[in-house]
Image 1 (cartoon, rainbow, N blue to C red):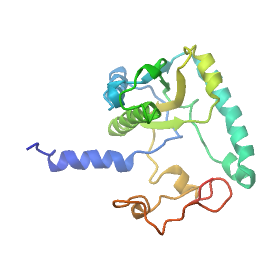
Image 2: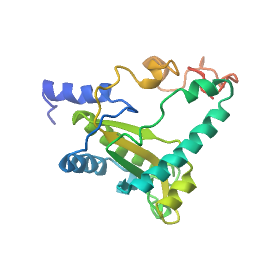
Image 3: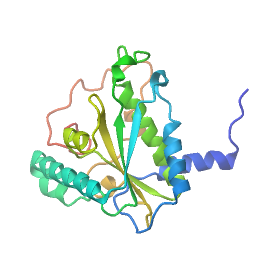
Image 4: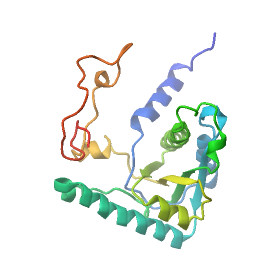
Amino acid sequence: MAQPFDEAERAAVYRAIYERRDMRHFAPGPIDPATLARLLDAAHHAPSVGFMQPWRIVRITDHSVREQLHATVERERIATADALGRRRDEFMKLKVEGMRDCAEVLVVALMDRREAHVFGRRTLPEMDLASVACAIQNMWLAARAEGLGMGWVSIFDVDEVRTLLAMPPGAKPVAILCVGQVDAFYPQPMLEMEKWAERKPLGECVFENRWPQDEPASVPEAAPDTPGKLP
């Protein structure tokens, strides 16, 4: 029978899970190349459906490219705020990215020619995206273990980023990752601290055998991003 990690090793794994944060505030200082290599290797060892390994990672080292990426994020930030209606001003006060402050900017994309991979995707083609999310989570947990912050930026125009980074037809950017030194990790998720939303109780998300019959079939219409409600 397979042996579990010892108590200290288990505690370290769970600590990384519970203390991982989507960071927006970064401190000056580079990332050691060997440490960055470990983070990338952690991402590359994520599980993937059909072992397709659909992640592609573009490291942004050109300052002008970083600034162009920041500009597309800023345009979409304003468009997102406008779409939020009465929560616009509240959203605009949030810090949603740290692209100009972090040591490294990494763009994670889905590879091209994914349609050739059918194993595990015939009825669930979106499993390629799920696999990329696993790679990002691997990197996130590894970064926390290394004492580095990481933030996932998803506010950008997909076609603008695709064109800027010369991605081939069929490839698709899904995340801009900010990685760098931090003075401290947030004690709670930032959006929870800012009262934007709150974590649901585990019991509302875990069922047994079937969907509860007293669970509402639909959620009444609510203001976008109201905590506890669907947009």
